[in-house]
Image (cartoon, rainbow, N blue to C red; front, side):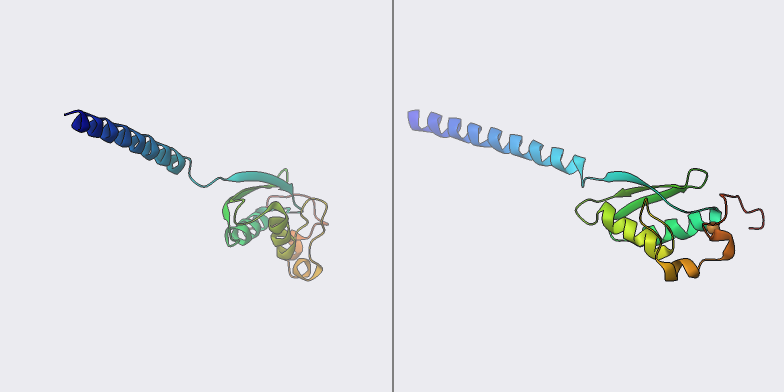
Amino acid sequence: MISLKTFLLALLVLLTAQVVRAQDKTKTKVKGPTTEQFQMKTSAVCDMCKTRLEKALAYEKGVQEATLDVPTQMLTVAYRPDKTSAAVLRTAVQRTGYDADDQPAEPRAYDRLPDCCKKTNAVHSDGAK
Ligand SMILES: [Cu+2]
């Protein structure tokens, strides 16, 4: 009889421990993969630049969301820090032909931009498109 009681007690302790562990697992899952966000100043000047940059960033590994605010030229990127980094994303922007913070655009990519997207232009909204 005593041994059965001990057995049941042990079983109870074991079950409780497992329930606690299961709850821990759920908590971790709910939190999900961490996302970080950062902003960089670009040389984008119009809505075409916005489309071009957002598309380029969307193809980058680890990017969850990229949004460019044309009036302020600020690009906001939500990304997975385990897959990419702010430095990699700046390089992606440079390769698209735009300055990324204090790092200049890659010259060849910049040359391929249409005239209205050159950084010599002031920020403008293109009525044409
Ligand atoms: Cu443009």
